[in-house]
Length: 424
Figure (cartoon, rainbow, N blue to C red):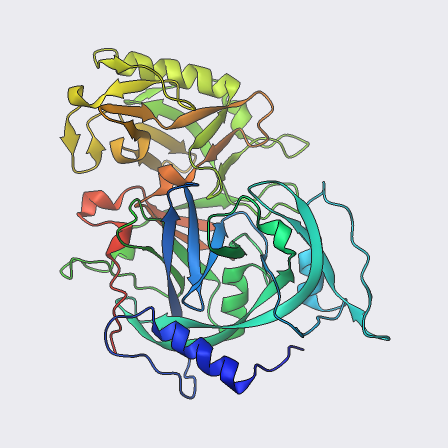
């Protein structure tokens, strides 16, 4: 049971929430049925990581594979009992390399829930009390924010030292992973009684935020003549790791092609082995797609062959293959370079065009934004944030399906085109 906020604190939270919007003010009255929520996503260019604003001004790092939210807790926070379902699920997703936690009494006679997790950037483990934290998030009709909705999320109380490596002004981490009760999307869906689905649209610019939707469609982006862009989603199956403590999402991939030609590598690496190694993972924590060495090497050779007529530039770490941008044409979907196809087992392709394959690193130089993850990379391939920018990704968690638009640029829009002005 959580402590009720002080009336002054409640008023300040509402005022802070209102600062997000630039038009008619939103109001928080008696809360009607909420079908969908919306929140802005920012890219931090110093770390190439993405944050989401909860309570309007409080930035949390987005961890697509994370199982729970963690941040410093307010004074006199409420405690969760050690037998509560949200405690049991949090403990089920404990990282195997973090020490086990023993729940303990506080106050006397009350068995409080203590959970462990880790900083996804530094890998440092820590433990803390589990609590529920109250927030206000904007509801939406898919076109604009419409009102303020009140909700709780499950939080692990983190020490200040746990924030190391996170983007500046970030106060914690929001896990978006595959859970029933404790990840941010799952908890919002449970608390507000809507279906556990969410969409991420990561921005490629600092000029305007991207957008996260929780709950029901539609999803509208500017320009206003565009229809609901969820109509353009292709759907594929999401896989789950055999490691039950892994909350990440995996694609069912059979092959990779460069310029329409299959890359010759051991495709069995894309399957999970008996120790849960392998698979094609989606991640917002690594900036660029990482491949195991025995996949990366044939991939980079295939890309070199497909671009042999394009003038090279000296390599810029961590990238191996760089080009003179003066020798590259430009298209609506980025530099005119060979497309990369992630070929899915259901016959769909996730095609990566120049905007998501080449990264501008210095004047007249752009590099292929894929890196060698080494021989011991646990997922065979981890798709990084840069490859997902200006893509719309719709996660239907109960049905284990992903709806995706590989690039919104083909529709002449981007993730930074949601209208965050109030529609009231």
